[in-house]
Length: 560
Image (cartoon, rainbow, N blue to C red; front, side, top):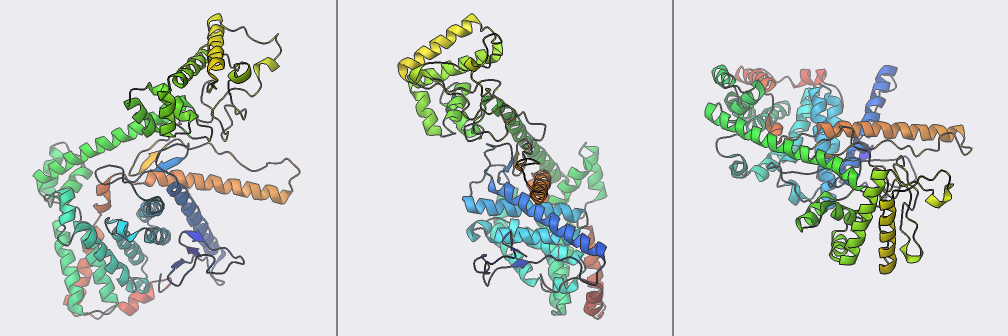
């Protein structure tokens, strides 16, 4: 049983303590019944387990901010223009969770698995319902989700489930009116008067309204009116072979030509304008994705803060815009845990800035000579190096330094490599300066890679997807040591296996996030055409309703 994205546990808590109220909606997943075959039961259990992994992965993505300070994937919320949208923290979490699950469900529906898609859509609906209504009323994501949810119920062939979907369709229509305007004026302000991206959405809504009315026993004329309205829109969505051939002859692709003609009402000139506009928008999205990918590699050079975060790109750009050297600004941010004002104060102080500069010079000298030793000053001039002794392979280290934990003087003199005279002189200058000013000079040392290994090609920027390289799996189990019993080892192995599966699902979700805002309206309407034709024929010939026979052919629960 899942409530608000959380799985209810069989423990001593009351329903009230678990956050269940009279208005809560509970998703219940079940395997096969006592009389079902073992295969059916296993399939149900596997689906429930997979759904739980999807939920956990989506929650992990939703909980992270969009700054990309860690090695994990992160998502950002953008509007149709591609600009980042600031949202209150709690609303952002629920909104991202709902949108990610919706994109996942759409991919599941494309595979034909409507039962799993329905579970994912219900979780998405629950997440969006937790958002501030003032936010969801301004966007059409929730209405589109409700339409997909009822469509999935129809595709399952469960007429009883479909017949109780009236409330969802009513909320979908009301939500579209709020988001698009009663006369579509808000939508037209975004898309222009030549384009009608919403046509397929409203057509599917009217088809579903007709189906629900038909199987609920509504007035025949009202049901027929829904199908007639849908038929008018369906005809407008049909693409002329001649117009398609013209665009193809102009060098445009089949998919972009068909979409352009559908969204522009068959007008070739408007379709060309739409295609060019979409290509430009696609190029801008690719450029943003490339900038994020480049930053994923650049940030590794600057190392991580003591808490394990990368340097904040926005803060770094701001400091560079003020005239500070980029490397120096990055080091100031790294040392000050990305606190912009503290970093600015350090850069603004002549003595502290000079200490940063000397520290960077020394680091570069160490890299050039391969000397990994630490500076050995005296008194207040002692230079701070990796306090945890974190090495290059310590993915969870608290410091970004890759300097070995063993101090230089602890090594036998016979094996110590001689230092370059110029570098030795620089060390003396640094130590003297630090001792005179009472300043601790920051040291990253080594190659500066620490736990921030260069991204392995997994980098994506989409509607939201500011995705950096996936972090290496660092198991927290104790393995086989410390006298752990076999039960404890099995538990650790099970937990590690689940983390691995959730990470894999997380990566899948990021790649399913849709970056094209027009894709939500680009619906294949061929099946709707068959539905419209079939039910208009039934209504026009006075055929009896097929509710009973259709219900007999459907399966599953009567309600969701």
